[in-house]
Each structure stands twice: as structure tokens, then as C-alpha cells.
Image 1 (tube, helix red, strand yellow):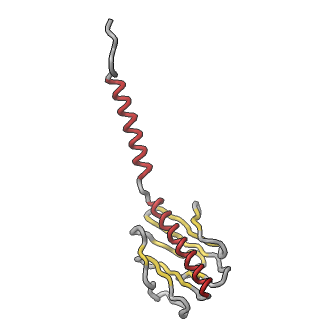
Image 2 (cartoon, one colour):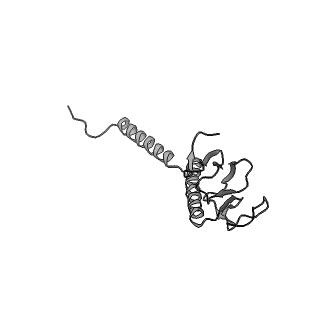
Image 3 (cartoon, one colour):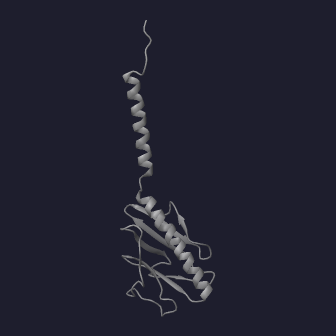
Length: 151
């Protein structure tokens, strides 16, 4: 009787199928989805809003933030109250094209006033990218944070 050496065709096919499944799961998990992009955008915006609020508290001059179609901007610090037609000063572009933003709180606000008082009104911003949505919020005292599962 002769001893078998090597693998059978069936064993090789099972191994190849397992490798294909593992590769597919890794590729799918590494794909950059709109949710991941939007979370990156929200974390960046939250950090910039917190920095602007800290700058306002330090200088004693209010910093204003407004989103536009091409991005967002800070200012005009210390100027008269801006209107809906006031352009966004020196807009910073969104990291991902197609990102849109709406100020939810304070209701119907077109600008966020960041400081200089240590306690401001609660602020909430909704970010959208495709079907993905995230909310960025501050209670007026703490830093901006990403809220998940909010309407």
C-alpha cells in the first residue's frame, strides 16, 4: 500500500475559499464609509469650535461661526450682528465633498456665537453626508461632542 503525500483537491479548495472569505471581510471592514467620513468631519469641526470658543474667552471678544455651501468660517469677531446675507469669512473647505450642515440649536440661528462668556446657550449642529447624519452638540459649558442615535 502506498502512503498519500500532499493535499487533495478538495482540501485545497476549502483553504482557498477560507482565504477568500477572510480577505473579503477585511476589505469590507476597511472601506471608508460615509459614516466614518462624517465622524472625521464632526471631530474636526468640534475641535475647531472648541478652540474658537477658548480664543474668544481669552480675548474677551465673541467669535462667530457660520457654515456655507463651500465650507465654514469664523468671524467677524466684534463686528455688528451678522445677517443671513453676510458672507462666510475665509471659508475653510469641508474634508469631504458633499458635507452639509444645519444649525439646529439655537433654533433658526444662522451663526453660532462662541463666547466670550464661559456659559453660553446650548448649541447643536447636524452634519450630513449622503444618507449619513451626525449631531455635534455642546450644553453651553462643556466641549462639543458627537452624539449618535439622535434625530
